[in-house]
Image 1: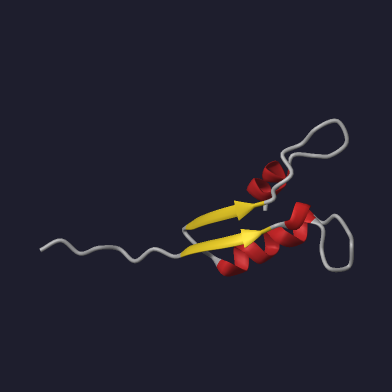
Image 2: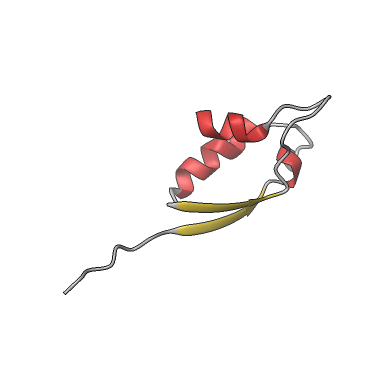
Amino acid sequence: MTRSRERRIATYNLHGAVGIDCKFAPERIGELLNEIDADIFALQEVPLGGAHSPDVLDVLRAA
């Protein structure tokens, strides 16, 4: 008999990494995602960098 491993899946909308205080703070989102401790995350509205903004995924990977 094969035992299946339980997985935690979460979805989260970053809203451009801007909090309710209107501050761009991807580090805070990284801390929150660590608290959720899911195996898989489906993230929405993630800034991927450009001329005037950093790649938030890099920040989240480092968290």
